[in-house]
Amino acid sequence: MKAENLVKSFQYAFRGFMYTLRTQRNFRIHCSAAVIALAAAAALQISWLEAALLFSAVFAVLVCELMNTAIEKTIDMVTEDFHPLAMVAKNCAAAAVLLASIYAMAVGAVLFVPRLLALL
Image 1 (tube, rainbow, N blue to C red):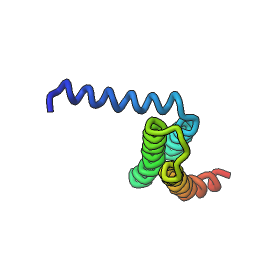
Image 2: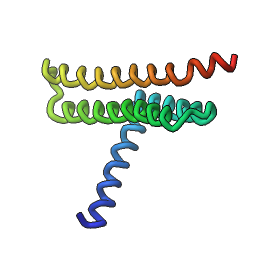
Image 3: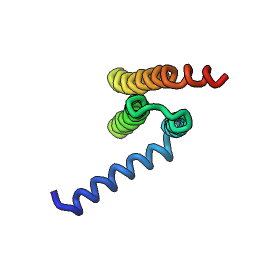
Image 4: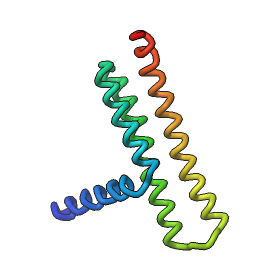
């Protein structure tokens, strides 16, 4: 792969990220939660292993949200009419985001609740 093709690939990915950040409220919420969680992790000085677990949870949510947006926009491009299979695809993509979010909340609870209780 030529260097300029690699650069273009990164530019396209950045555009996709920025599009989703600009247009999807839930993605902005998830990004804000990620920043807060990562700041809390730094403040509470979690271990490298715990940080890896937290990063996996944070990125799982963001990746699922990006894929959810891609699926929704692709379906919207193909048809404006209601189709039961389109609804299934959109619902499954939303469910993936929900499951990733539950995972992230569980990781956050395991990492942060004991530390926050100890501070009280």
